[in-house]
Length: 166
Image 1 (cartoon, rainbow, N blue to C red):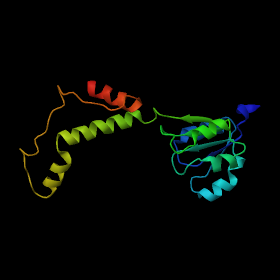
Image 2 (cartoon, rainbow, N blue to C red):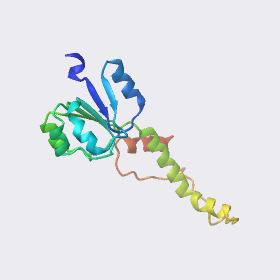
Image 3 (spheres, helix red, strand yellow):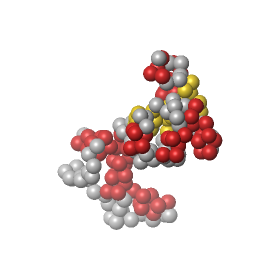
């Protein structure tokens, strides 16, 4: 059984093209359903051995029952809240996600937000655009020597902490 019995995969949401390229190299048919409505996907879901999703719509019991050939669900991103995980496992469907996928971007964004907050960048930007310069009211706070509390130390929290230490 070639490719573990995986012959056809539905891309329900847009994801990085690398995944599709790799599947096609392995002679797996990849159908782009990103522009298809959920009713049409539901009606054709039994054609697929795997689906690739983000969070466009829930993968619930109704969909899983209809997807009689489904062997896997690949979630591009960390959260699996839109998938009925227990029922999928009960049906023997393997679940994959990519919690580390955007850890760098999220950490860098969090650093940017922290700097914006500490230095009143949003407020100062608006004021300057309105011809107002309030230097003392917009004086910032330096990060050096500060302790930053991080709630959650998974992929994102640890990446944020790594950047704060450098």
